[in-house]
Image 1 (cartoon, rainbow, N blue to C red):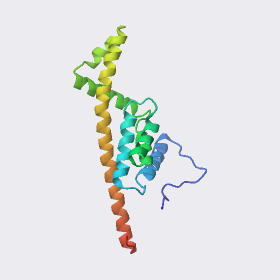
Image 2: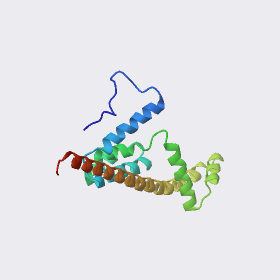
Image 3: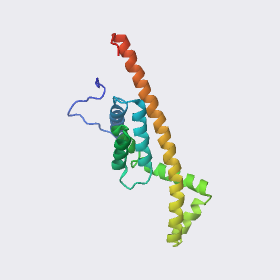
Length: 174
């Protein structure tokens, strides 16, 4: 496997946050898309990881993603990479989307629930708020997993086509 674009000098470290995030994106690409596994298995692994990453598993996303990938014979590295979708940068966006979608589906007013928590009706409002959040989170996590499946599947299919074209150009037959 040629990964010249991934290698760097041993003493050099990315300096800025943008450089570090770019390096992380390259590493995730190298570990997920370049895996020698069927595109369907890689895509399902990513989808399971994304679903469990977005769903509130309270720190158990990585072990659950690995366990489910092992159980259903999906790609384990892809499942772990998919679980990394929930991080300090993306968490507020997923939380807000889950609350907004849940409030739209349940019919509750998000601002009224939040105001109820502030007016010391915490137990009632927190229970209602949790229900609204979980309903929205199931929808958001499912949509994110479906989008991740499609993106990973297309990326792996493109990888396989590039490999097949490279084999044909070099004269190797499979």
